[in-house]
Image 1: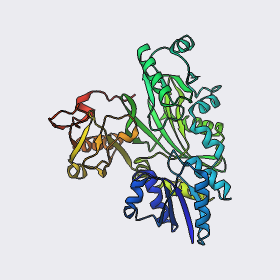
Image 2: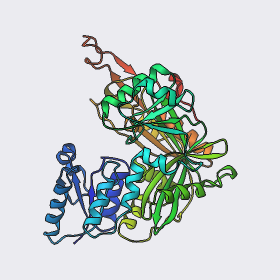
Image 3: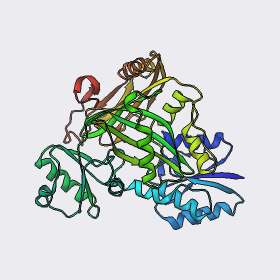
Image 4: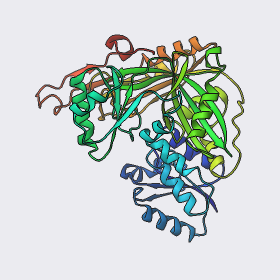
Length: 433
């Protein structure tokens, strides 16, 4: 029996799509998970043939569980993870068990944003930056800053925009510096200049040192305490100003030493020069796999699995159609009572898919990371503008009805039901760089 072993997953998004892709490819699907909720709801994972509890931070426990599987006369053909937390572990285990694996040292370098910046420090692709020790005081940092306010400070291990802060003044610098020092007392802090310009996401597979671009997506950025991507526009053709983007992407990926693997880059065009926002050693999560499939006919999770099996991926578009994904976030926190407008959104012009993640009783909050995006609409149209307009119009119909938490309301006896305003209209914090 031929199997593919996955280390961790989310309940939705690209990592879940990968499980389904492996099943479609005819493999026995094994999932190691350290999430109790997944084990308790294992019947919901119909594409998983065997779900096993495992501490994914304990390499020896993972090894022992793999050996137990092999003793059941199951041939593990690949060990993979489509999650940020466990992609390096999967690479290490694949190497130890003699399987095709992605480039482990490249994954390690991409996961650390300070190392990644240092790799590109002598190129034009890096913004101005500095790394400061976890124990540095505000008075030690200010004289060394080589760029003005506003700028960005972040944890070098941050993912999904968590622990990435825009700093507008000395007071904010002091506050967020202490926040990061308290949260990760042994970790250095990355400080970098603020970059202004249009932002793009590039999905990449690397096969035998060849950098293959699966898709280029224009991003819309919402700033509300954090930088949150709320809109994705699939580019079917590259305009003249983006013609040098593939070359920049290839140079950055090769500089990190990736010979085989998957990654995605976020880049900004700043005064006609490409700057790397960040590079991550996996395909993007959320709706990205579906966006690419619906727009180009390429199932990126399946092609990534083929890469892990030692096969050559095929990123040739089967068709081309304009696709836009609009996410929904909330501007206030509260306990979710109900969600309305899903059917109306589904029946709207051009809509291909509507997804709402939270269930009744969940606590919703303004976005502090990408995980705080609670719904999305995927739509198409005859043009980029029409696809964008269709997605946004449908997303506006989705409403989250919430009541204030007793704890959040200082144990008030009044539980107020509120209708969340649309963040893209009434709050006024969305802007497209």
